[in-house]
Length: 186
Image (cartoon, rainbow, N blue to C red; front, side, top):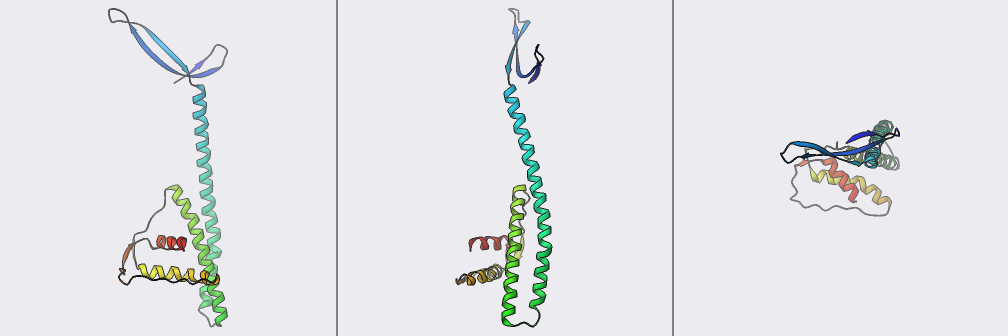
């Protein structure tokens, strides 16, 4: 590609092809030069590149915003969870304990939603990492469904789990992702 300057002062992008022409003795006698105006194609390519840069900048801004909001939301949310745990460790009436358990379940759910939003950003950025740790599947399923049972009960539903007895006690994988799948399925 070459940038050509016209006699009227304007420029145009041209694709150039040079074809050698030989005489009867095989000597190079001249060149045939073919020029094709590719100005519109170049403008389109430049517009696409500018749009790509703009989209990448927007994506970076979104990621920075989510990371910042994550911190801003997690700090008070962790305080709510911590204070709820402390309050649950004190002498409470059954009604007070139920209220605090609902607060804790709701805060845990909110934290999970926040983590899901951050996971989407990680997936988009290609930075999602899957853990590989030992865990007990039955325990993960019971804990997850226990948290979901409160919401089911509030809606007048019963949530029960029936697991085969021959499930291995120790599995290797990502228990957090298993929890996410269960939350999304239920």
